[in-house]
Amino acid sequence: MPGTPSDPAPGADPYRGYAALRQRCPVQAVPSAAGGFPGYLVTGHAEARQALLDPALSKDTAAFFADRPSGRRIHPALAQSMLATDPPAHTRLRRLVAGAFSSGTVDRLRPYIHQLAEQLVDAFDPAGTDLVEALAAPLPVTVIGELLGVPEADRGHLRDLSGRLFAAGRPQTVDDASHALAEYLDALVTAKRTTPGDDLLSRLLEARDGGGSPLTQFELTSLASLLLVAGHETSTNAIGNAVLALLQNPDALARLRQDPGLVEGAVDELLRYDSAVALATFRWTQRPTRLGGQDLDAGRPVLVSLGAANRDPLAFADPDRLDLDRDAGAQLAFGHGIHRCLGAPLARAELAIAVSTLLRRHPDVALAVPAEQLRWRETRLMRGLVALPVTL
Image 1 (tube, helix red, strand yellow):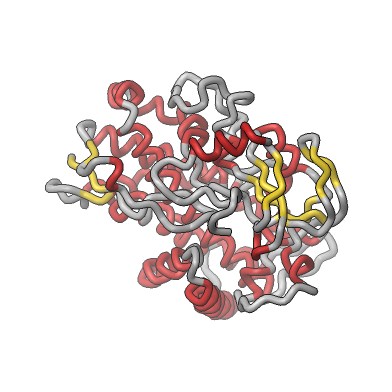
Image 2 (cartoon, rainbow, N blue to C red):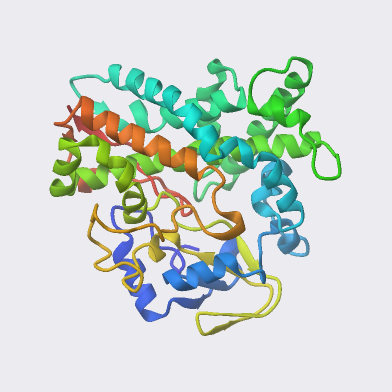
């Protein structure tokens, strides 16, 4: 994708480029989309919502690449996860796991998340701290590890493997990480069969669908891989992006410093302002369809830019301004439709608790380096910081 309109380069501010693309046309053909195949890029908010709902856009990655040569060897448990399937297979899998991420389940987890956030903030180095390393990364990976029943000693290793899955421009690194992650989780599922615990994986071993069928070993490994990766990668980026947004917007920061409890109501705006997921995951046109006034040919990848859609002035007035009073409930940071992020309630709770705990404990937190010196992760799918050095 380098050098094409579908590839706003990772960096401090991709939003000017998004605006130019959206102004040119909210749905446009691009010469190189997913896998180097010509496809379409969606940058408008209304068009993105339409695309995320359109049944003509398939998520079945395996079907798209079945007759197209590829040198990639991503482990099937990741390549063919619930996120890369269509109904009815998707419906069956999502129904079996949805209860684990309900609002009620997340409410029961809140005391644990609060306690963990306090412990992490207690460990801050008063001389200076990297908020990604000290808070944004360990909080969600610990929570999802606890939920899945991953041994505490292994969580750092899995966090490292998960990060390698988003190494743009390094396909061998991505492929190797996918196999290492899937093999570890396959062994963990096997161990849970013998010695179940009070965790999600153990409960999924007992789950049955409407026909009374249990999940297969492959399905359990695939779900565990998806939940582990999606359960902390997006939250890590969301926490880092939100803290940076506040540090760069003094008026908004001052309001939340005075009353950190206001963070809960500001979550949608923080997610909208700098989306942790830049591009929605792979979709393709399984038949001709029409989107945003454009005719889309069959058999083409469709890239939906959630970051661009969340800054569309037709959906959000003055979209480049962080406005904590804005009704940003229509933001698309978690996607939309049947593939909307299953863990959205958990991610929202982690973001609110992390930011409110930080501002309550360290109201004078400030950037330790000029913003232009911050490094962003080199991945097109996610948008997140490598590090966020602050003074306390």
